[in-house]
Amino acid sequence: MSTQNGKQAAEKLLAGFADVLNNVNADAIASFYTQDGVFMPDGFKKLTATDLGMAGNQYLKKSGFQISYDIESVTFDREFAFVETIAKIKVRSDSDDKTFSQSSRDFFVLRKEEAQWKIYRYIFNHVRAN
Image (cartoon, rainbow, N blue to C red):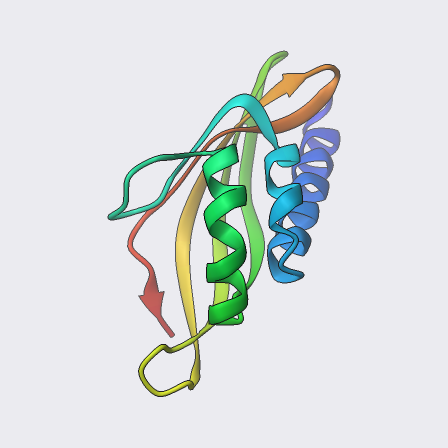
């Protein structure tokens, strides 16, 4: 796979993932992860894709969560891809119901599963308010 094709595959996967999150389709979150995929949010316990589907719906609705990913780099081999992104996030504050923007540096390890790239590991650093 060429570098351009690898980046396009990563962009497609992450755009679809963001769309699922932005449209509060928590039932579809697991479909973007490998069967043994894990989300490791900063400051929280790690979650499986199944955990995300169960807990995500309430949080996504309550916070008005919106996210987009700007891909900075993609490195891949036959089975794995490593994707560095800057995530741009909008959420609604619990305390005053105001919407604010944040950004974070996100790191994905993708793994090919049945000829499709899926999220194997997803981690991000502290979120910075904009």
